[in-house]
Length: 108
Image (tube, one colour):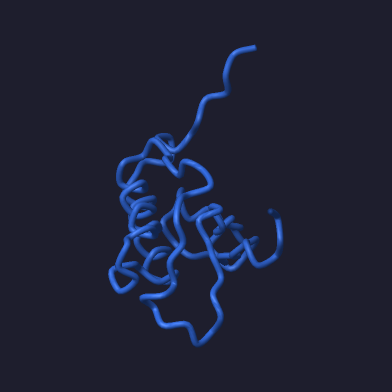
C-alpha cells in the first residue's frame, strides 16, 4: 500500500539525535497503518464507522500503542486528528533515547 497519500515528509532529519530542526534531507513517515478508511466528504462523524481492524497495530512501545488505539475510538469526536496524532507521536519519540528505538535483527 505504498501510495503517495500514505507518506508524510517531515523536514527534520537527524532530529532524534539533535532534537533540533535542520534544513536538509527530510525524514519520511508511512502514515497509513491500514487503519484508514475514507468516507464521502459530507458524511456526519457519527456515521464514519467501520467494523474490525485489518491487522494488529501493536508496536510493543506502550506509549505509542496508546496513541494508535485512539484512532479506533468508537466515538469519532474522541479520536485525534492527524496533526494531533503526529504531535503526540513526535513528543513520545523525542522523549526516548534513540538507542531504545532500535530493533535488533533476528539471528540467521
